[in-house]
Each structure stands twice: as C-alpha cells, then as structure tokens.
Amino acid sequence: MDAATKRNSLLDAAGSGAPVVLLQADAAPSRIAPILAQHFRVLRYAVNDPEAASSHELATALASHTTDPVGMIADAASAHVAFALIATRPELISALALLAPPAPDRAFAELKTPVLALFGTRALPPQIGRQLRQAIATCHVMLVYDADDDMANQRPEAVAAALRDFMLAGDRFLVTGKSGKLYP
Amino acid sequence: MRSSLAQFRLADEVGFDWVTVAEHHYSPFSLNPNPMLTAGALTQIVRRAKIALLGSTIPILNPIRVAEEFAMIDTMSGGRVIAGMLRGTPNEYVTYNINPAESRERFEEALALIVAAWTQTEPFGWQGRYYEYRTISIWPRPVQQPYPKIYMSGSSPESGEFAARNRVGLGFAFTNVPLAQKAATHYREQATRAGWTPTADDVIYRVLVHVADTDEQALDDMTNATKSGPRTGLTMANRTLEGAVADAGYYGRDREEQRQRLMPRGLKESIDIGQVALGSPETVVRQVERIGRDLGAGIIDFTIAHDMGDKTLHAIELLGTKVLPRMREMEF
Image (cartoon, each protein chain N blue to C red):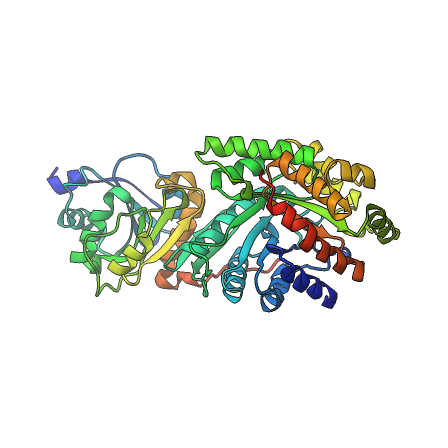
C-alpha cells in the first residue's frame, strides 16, 4: 500500500448517485453518512496523520475511486487538506462543505466552487464569519443551533439536511424548495 | 389609544425612567397585540425615557422579524430600547396555534437566534430545531452595541436557570412577592454558579398601581374601576383554556405553584402579597419600598390603572412628583 492510500484510507462507500466524499480525521462512525447516502454515493475517507497529508495524495486516492468531480465534506481536522486540494485542483470538487473549519491561511480570490462552513452555536469562534468571507468571498456560513464542533454527531439530521441541499444545489441552496402547504 | 399615548407622554414629562409596553392577544384588558407598533409611536412622543418592550412573546413569533423590529425601534429611539423576551401567557399559545409543550425550547432557540441576528457581522444561516433560515442579515442593526439590554420572565426555576446561564435580566409579572422572592433567590444562586452576580437592575417586578391624594380616594377609584367584574374570553382568566395549556406541558417542574400565580385574589390580599400598590403617595412609597427590599429589585414596573381618565393622569403626576423621587433614594 503506498503512502497516499495509507494516509487517505477509504473507510466505506454507500448509496448511489453523485459522489460525495466525507473526509474525517479518524475512523469513527459517522451519523451523517447514512443520511447522505439516501441521496448520494458517499465515500468516507479517514485522513490519517492529517498534518502530513497532502492535496496531491488526496487527489491520487480519490482518482482510484471516482473520476467525476465530487462534493466534499471535511471535518475540522481535515479542513486544511480540503483547502489545499481546492487551491491546487479546484476541478476535482463540485462543492465544498466544512464542519467547524479554522480560517484558511490563504485567500481564494478566484474560486468559483461553492463553499459552505458550518459552526455549532456552542463553539462559535469570534469573527470567524468575517475571516472566512475575507478569504473566500462566496463562502456561506451556517450556524447549527445547540451544538459544538461535534455537530455531525450531536445534530446529524440538521447537519445532513443542510449538506444535502448544498450538495444538490450549490449556491442555490439559499432558496428553499420545502412546501409550506398544510393540506391539499 | 389616544389616551394611552397622552399617559405615556405625561409619564415621560414627570420623570419616569422607563415607559413599558407589553404584548397580549385576544385581550380586552390590554389591546396591544403588537407592542412594536406602540413602541414605534412612542419613539415619536417619548423624548427622554427608555422604551421597554416587556415584552415580545418570541416563541409564537418569527424571531428574525422580532430582531428586525427591535433594531428598528432602537434606531428610531436613538438607542433607548429595553428588550424584554417572554414566553407569553398560557392562553396566547392558542393565538397562533403553537403547541404549548414546545414553548420553552422555542423560547431558548428564538432568543439565541435573535442575539445572533443582532451580533453576527456577516450573513449566516441557521439550522435549528424549530427555526431554519438559509441566510440572515438584518438591517438596520441595533444602535446599542452589542445589543439592547435583555430581560426575560422568570417565575419558574427553569427560566431562572436559563437567564442565569445566559446572563440576562429577570422580570416578574403576574406573580406575587413571596413567589418572586423565591424565584429571584434561585436566579441569583444560579448566576453565582455561572460566575457572575446580578445587580439590582437585573431584576424587574411588575405591580398594578393606583395613587390618589388620599388612601380613601385611591381605594374608592379602584373599587369603582373594577365594578364591571372579570372579563375572561380567551384571556388568561379563562381557567378552562389555562388548564388545557397546563396539561399540554406549558409549565415546568413546579407546575402547580406556577398555576397558583394566576389565580384571582381579593384586593386586600393582592396588596398584602405585593400584586397591587394602592393609596396615597406616602402609602405607595411604603408598599413599593417593601417590594423592592424583599426582592432586591432595582426596577419596579408600574402597571398603572389606565382606564380612569383624569384620575389616571393625576396618578401618573403623583407618581412622578411624589413617589419616584423617594424611590430614587432607596437602596436595595
């Protein structure tokens, strides 16, 4: 097994449809993956040793499983790998969602890919919205009520619903398609 | 409505620190289903006093709309808004067909959302339990930064605990001094656990008041004004409705004690337990001093018996000229 595959190991794959890659810093079970798998082909990767992981290695690992652009969801610890990949290979990612990411250490002035950052209201870093917008002008920020950085386990239905709509519609997820009609 | 505005104008002129408006629905005694509208009018006639909305019943409203309206009124008043956030009375869960069992959770989330709407400097979405928005960006923002002083109603232990955790002020209405004293003590204990100490101005107590030149005149005025008897309809005096809301789970762990707060009482008992302040200025000063001292409440919210025409205006004058100066000398 080469270093790239070792550092970016495929944990499991489920569902069908457009590919969505879930990056996490460990192999722990995900509560959002089964919900997302109802709509997408979900490929769950553990980014082992995330500090050493590189975008090149991640791109290589992805190429062995899919040739289509993917929707990517990264947790806090693997966010920097996702940032690195979208900086060098933006064509590989159709939409990028980040769970409690740190502010990126670079600006993405020309980025066209839709980006969504989710934060729990119980662990909301001050000024993070402004920092993200300064780095990624088109970044959407979503607050997940009554959760912290572990929001995907604490409020999986709420997190997955936002991710689903964002992966399906990109920036157009701002417009709800949910019916308000009570009875026909 | 015209006479109410005249009363507010006079209260401002004679030196009241705050004028307050409340939200009540389907209510013949209040006629104020939207306090934001009244407060908007008050920004144009009340020049000095703070305008306190005590308050907005946020679990039955759209929180973003509430955040926007508070911010507008704060702007229109030059930063004089006090933001009271209430659950509302039990009957009001019928008004907009909201499940009373969800009241407390809705309140807590709505308050968090309103504060976020006031303080986030960039557009943001909200993925809540009861509220979901994809992007929020209110304009204008409040003049008072980071946001206006917040109070919430706090008769139940759960409310006191939530207020303490969130460092907001606590208000008591439709209760009495012994029950409020117990609740205020619990609030202060919980605040200590949360690492802060509320000041006297963090506690508001609302009391029905009427002042006349003599005790006898005040009693006579009040007796005549309440001769028409109770008006129930869909108000909180409707015990059938209140019972159904109670059974749905509106109250918390001290349900029966909370229900007792709303029971009608005779005038003498109401005065004894601090629900009513009535008499000459000297008598009312003594009654208010006892309430303030027993509760450590820095803010007494007078519900002035408002439908007595000139007698109400005279009461406001007496309060402003003879009661308020004495209250300012009191220390709780």
